[in-house]
Length: 181
Picture 1 (cartoon, rainbow, N blue to C red):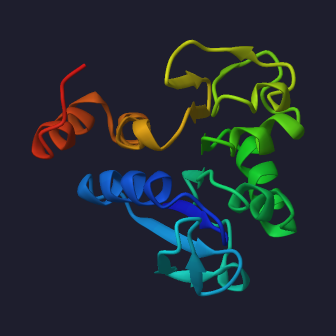
Picture 2 (picture 1 turned 180 degrees about the vertical axis):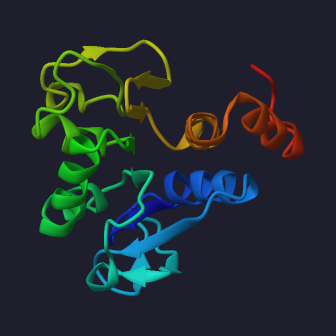
């Protein structure tokens, strides 16, 4: 089970592309509305989350995803349930995925200390203790980070790779006519 957190001001592509990749791979993924059942992206698109933060439990989680966007990232960081989910995922070695500005949430918690990570340009200082990657998608242990909306599909395919293997990631890549690496 993968939980993708949505808060008002999220970047729509950074949430929907990974969600699409995961569901194409038949990985059960649930969107969690942090700021309500209907969550409005930074571009004004409103998405109906599968569940609200009040319905969220960490049981059977394999991964969590934090999309970026502003003020979505700040809304994620300010939520105590999201913070607890990150802590639990870290303690259990579950996959923690963040894109764009959202890796800053992990940096502020010290989770990137000594790890390779990336983020949207301008947020590097928030990746406290991280080794900044030149890659658009960076993987280090149980943490996957990515730069922004333009690599949202690659970000999603990397999550698929870690949860279901390279073959499934490549199958999804081919099915959507995405350039091969």
